[in-house]
Length: 282
Image (cartoon, rainbow, N blue to C red; front, top):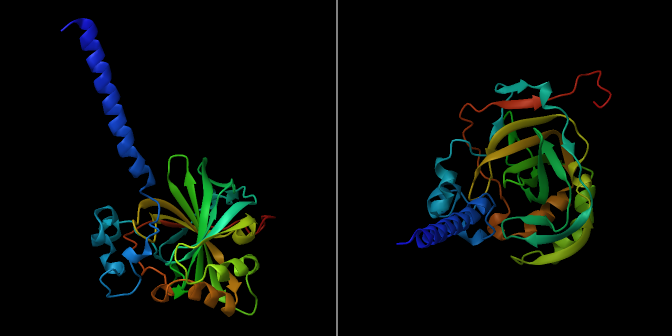
């Protein structure tokens, strides 16, 4: 074989190898995303598709059953340490075009435009979507609140970071949810129903509280991918009973309680950021 032909064959082989590696990398890059096919899993304890069986339903969901860094967990103050170097949450959210989706197991707001980002350790995580769980998934010293909002972010390297906000039922409703109520009613009881809702300002959902918990965990729905940076805002916000029931009744009947059971902390480090008392931002 001539040197020229040998060189051509090696070049073609290299291109084929690169193509195979690229095709294999695409599903891996998307593997962290939560599944949107709720008929494949349930939140009912003891059900064949219930939380204790998620890890055996699909091979790519194995982490749900065997992962050592699963979420949610109990934020026990016995394991929490103060780390002021974490600093304030640096986010630059902005209003963006969005749709609201009934995924069957939850109600999700998906941002179609640039809704801004959250910066953690110098890395920007871009806000992609937000959704609600009731009751709350994380607990604080064993106490479970009525609802939990997840703001899901993704970096350029496809790593996830989630901000969680806890709610309890009270006399005042949630202003962010109030804006979405007409759209939630439109998609109620229809899985995969999606409605464009125009501009949505995520700053109204995030609020301005400064104190938060931080730990490394996973997505709380299949495929339960680990390596997720969790930030749980300490200040509990208020939601009306009507709003909570609206979210619950909009999803499938067996998904009204869509909170994954607590997972083992496995000696994971849990930090809390709290500004100094004399800090003007406190």
